Image (cartoon, rainbow, N blue to C red; front, side, top):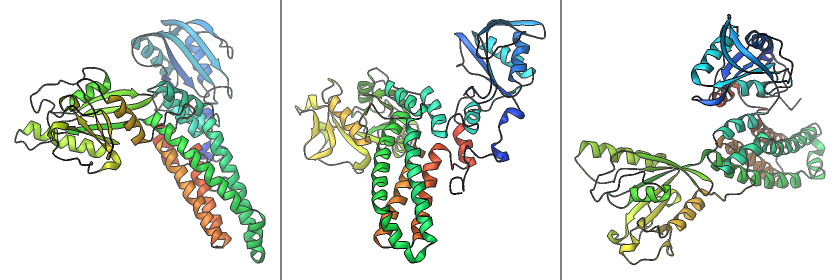
Length: 459
């Protein structure tokens, strides 16, 4: 059977994928810390109903909200609502009980302590979503979309996460996966008839199918890159000489006086980070210390951190004082640097992109002239189009799509050179495995663990 020959598939019935419902029951606070009108303790596993009923003091009918007084060992803890979702009709696919009480941290902790004392254990980060994945309720891309939706930094990011959670992204992946699988079957059948191998591949129009698959994966990868930008955003380091206007640029882009601005060189000595949304694109701006030679030990450390931040950043804004620039030059690393020539209000220069210098934009941080053009240049440089149809995606999805694309392109080349069917079959196998990693069909266990470990405990 080709389908689950490697990795783990959600339909596998091996012991390592056994449902948790016969082993242990987990619990956690599912609402954010702090004070609120409502707080929720979620319980999942075979003992959920027993534990929930011991707290509410009466039977919990499935899918009905029951107003109850929450007690433990005869002590009244809270007054709230109990909900029971019988397996498999729940988020995790197991019996699930939710105790909805008043949203105070002390109340929630008392309620959680009572649930743990009644036989549940504290859930690991992401364990509810992990169980939903392992029990076939959602695939891996949908599970990640849950976390992405919670962490959304913009409306576009939230809408993209909802699309992925609904299965839109997975549907595209599964359709491509099925086409690759059918090709694998055809090619591997040709291996059994070596005398008719070439004729078999030509009659099967494998070349045309591969060309169509390459186009489809390329298009999906482009959508995925937009989704990844919406989900993960970009980090932008602002660097430059002292008094070039770095802090003023940070304030202008963020729309607030986040950084202290003075005429004294060396005012900014440590990193200052501001999170914002730039026309739908989540951005982390990092203002850094002015780059110059100095003997001040504090400023030396600031310069070191500035250079380190520039190395880590997705994009660098190199701010210059236009009046102090002797000649027109491009940045040393134009592929990930935009030069921002500031103080055009003092030089009578025009704002916006510089005609002969495609990586340079002129602005006035004092008046705001050219800032709109700079925002457009930032989005263009990172490849953000702001497509409203994008779904949420992660870097691992992009890497998997690129791996599948490379394997399919290799197939096209092998077909042109009349390579052996075994070689073509191997490339199709690699493409199939890469696509399966996205939805979790062929994802290694260690990768699954690292993915769910980034979730909050209540999910």
